[in-house]
Each structure stands twice: as structure tokens, then as C-alpha cells.
Image 1 (cartoon, rainbow, N blue to C red):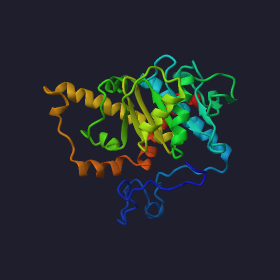
Image 2 (cartoon, rainbow, N blue to C red):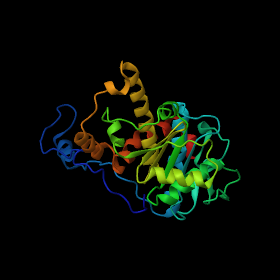
Image 3 (cartoon, rainbow, N blue to C red):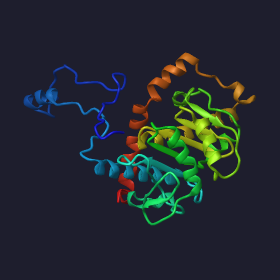
Image 4 (cartoon, helix red, strand yellow):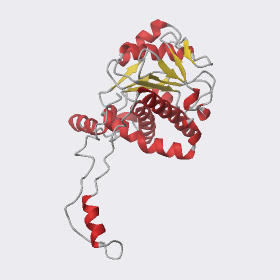
Amino acid sequence: MSVSENTPMAADRSVFLRSKIKIILTGSETKEEAEAALRAPINIPRYPHFNDVHEQRVHMKQKLAAGFRLFAKFGWDEGVAGHMTFRDPEYPELYWVNYFGQSFSQVRASDLVLCDHSGAIVRGNYTVNKAAFVIHSAIHEGRPDAVCAVHSHSMYGKTFSTLGRKLLPITQDSCAFYEDHSLYDDFGGVVYTPEEGEHLKSALGQSKAMILKNHGLLTVGSSVDEAIWWFISMERCCMSQLIAEAACTNGFEGLQLIDHEVALGTRGNVGDKQAGFFQFQPMFAQIVKEQPDLLE
């Protein structure tokens, strides 16, 4: 997300503008107030505008911290496993990440560590998970458009990954990933080698999400918000499909799939970067209200 980006939500399909119908809500407003209401602007959701790169950096760190708090709230933390990174807006070759060993439930914006491609610490006093940077440095290197990358060992994501196949278009939500997620089917243990990182980068390709067989999920986005939302949504899609398959007597072959053209069209509505960004905003507002210390 650039400093100047303030594009409104795309959506002639998502928002309505002011009606021209003239009414007066009897007992609730005067004639003058009713006329003023017709002239009042409609607040259309927009990307934030930043006055400088420092303001943007703080905002992005707060969004990432919120992502960790949400994951902890959802029970998607697993010991010291899992990590999220985003490119620094001033130095895009450097990345902010959670430090190794900190509970997702305690991450604050000020706790994030700035690292280079090798995982060496540029700012911060804690070390980072080596696997985090083998994975994330390769992903960011291969995807210049990926501002943020998210990976965690969430329950339904890692469970679905054991099937060694992709999500099916069985719900409107899963259509967001239709023909836009990949499968990495060569699990080789904890990711420590650069070669493994290269394989992950190749498997992801230009998709926004990937299922790592016997491991879990990974998502990327052009904003912190988008990458976190795709992970949340994909985890829930894995949950939905596992439940649906369990209810079928003949497994996934009994599921009613959404037609190819309809799935593609639906992806255009619910699977683009604007949709990913704005879907995250209510969750961000909710977790900040519940846990305001994450902004520190």
C-alpha cells in the first residue's frame, strides 16, 4: 500500500450513494435538518492516506500486531510456530516480523523486529525464527507485489493440508481462492534451508495463498490487512470443507460445486485486493477496542 493510495472501495457493486427522496422524520428532525441530511456526504470506505513514511510504518506495525492478537483469540497460535512479515515502506528490502518466542497474545506494535533477507537484526533486541526468514525472504523475493506474508499452524488449515489437495469452490467464500491458490506437496520437515525456500517460492507462483502439505497455510497480500484477511478466510474455508466432506457418505465427490464461470465471477467480487483489505477492517476495529495495548 503506497503512501498516496486512497482509492475508494471498488464498488459500484458494494456501496450505495445518497437518495434523492425528500422526507422529514416527524419528531426526529426539523425541515432544515432534513435538508442538511440530503446534502451530507456519504462516508465511503477508503484506503488510508499517510502524511509521511513514519506514519505509514506505525500504521502497518499496528495492523500486524492486531493480526497476531486475532490469531491468538482464534486459537491459531502453536507454541513458537507461526510468523507474519511486512516490507518496510521506506526500505522494502527489510522486513518487520514478530520476535522468536513471544506469544501472539502479547505482541504489540513496538515489539516487532526489523530484519534483512538473511534474518539479521536491523532494529530490535530479540532474535527471530530462522524458519520464518527462510520462508518469508524467499516469498518476498519472488513476489515484489507481496507487501505482507502470513503463516501459522492453525487447526483446520494444517488438518486440511494433510489431504494434499486444494480447496474446492463449494461456498461463496471459497470462491475467493478459486484458481488463485496453490499446493506445496513436498513436505521436508522444518523449513531451514534456502533450497526449501526456493521450492516454496516456485510453488506459490502468482497466487495469493498456498496450502503447504502436512504443514499449514500461507497467504500474501499487497497490504498487511489483505494478507491477514486471506489467511482468516482460508482457514475458515478449510473448516467448512472438512465439515462438508464429513457429512457426505462419499467424501468430496458428494459436494455440489459452484460452476466454473460463476466461481470466477464470484472471485472477482470477493477475491480481489480491495475486498481483502476492507474485509479486515471490522476485525481490526474490534480487536483494538478489546485490546488497545496492541497499538503501543
